[in-house]
Length: 285
Length: 285
Image: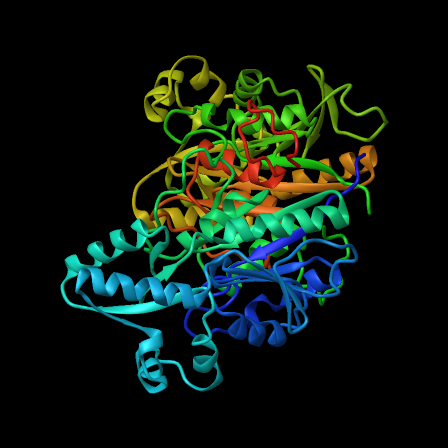
């Protein structure tokens, strides 16, 4: 017999733990309860901003580290690990790793792109609060928090389809990343969720010595995270056309369905929990 | 830290470990190698006959117990477990649990159904070897072995669609099960893969004390097996319409795709193996 490694779970939020339309995680509650009962670290890993993620951490009662803005930064609660480790800055009770390029630098670069191409580009920073609200279809705190981007500048392009390629090439020439987020174009640094997972894996290994990592997501921006974990699960909705799973990744299980009910199944299955937790099935895991 | 329970894997064959058309398991070889390296018992659980399953056990180099004819019988190699346990009979080097109804009794019942309904029914036992061969599209040893059914009688009904319901009800009245196998009707006793899994779980628990069971299949006859294991995985092909997963089964993960390549992914993922085994990734599991 060998000893069990400590399980660490890395999860995407939108469309994965959270319902894509309602943002509810209620159907995942049985697995969330079991994770808490077993003392398993659950690390939220999202393209959302720190301010948005703090809302969901509070709602889910989560006090573990988290990965914001597609790996732009890793936030570790200051007293979470009991040993010393290097980090970029301490702020608001977190030790922060900054993997992304600071927002001010992104805006600066985007302005240079605008000038050099002559294409009409409007960044979030150029828009009024009201314009952002109406473009995003968000309201209240969530819209306010979605604006607090620190490592990513969303923008719109006014003009022809072909302008997008010109802008993309220009951004990449300048050593940054272009991404299409479904609603806006984005300029960001060379960060991704996988690099952020790598940092947290190192810290958890220092704490627990032997760890086993599960990753779960539903989008291409989750691929670097899935490539960095031992147990990768990719959720796929009906009729969704995800890019091919990268070759050389034999262990990626593609699960039929998305959202919190499917998340619940994957986690309960992984933990070996046949019942909902309330039934008192203690054999699980 | 706790001790790791011994993993036991129960797997369906057709459409799951074996390709539905070619019967090849080649794409699953990396996971099969890893299972062997880790000393994990891999239990074949199929609707195939003992004679058919012995072919695939030999091809895959498998010497573990197996479940034949949809749980009609469990075959345990005689010296596999080191302790004494009750079984139904010892035969050809196996200790056999007979959960199904013996073939002679099934044929007898089917003849009574034929008389009482007046419907024209032809059982395998009524057909010549050549008729069976041409109906099954099989040839050589495999066809011969497929005929050696001990706990299940396949049959055809000559007549109207509505006759099927009449025959089904008559069989159930007599305390037996009717099943549609995709090509033939079947009469069998009250056995299923889940009951057979239950017996083997008991034996493995006696041997290892703490076990963790994975089940993987693609058809309704796998559902009782999936309901009996800790980690149930149901494979679903493109456009296949499987009956709903039974309610109260929160941990069933429905995997996108079927066959040995998908089987390989699920098992490597479960074992935490990121590489193919040949690469020497020893962190897995």
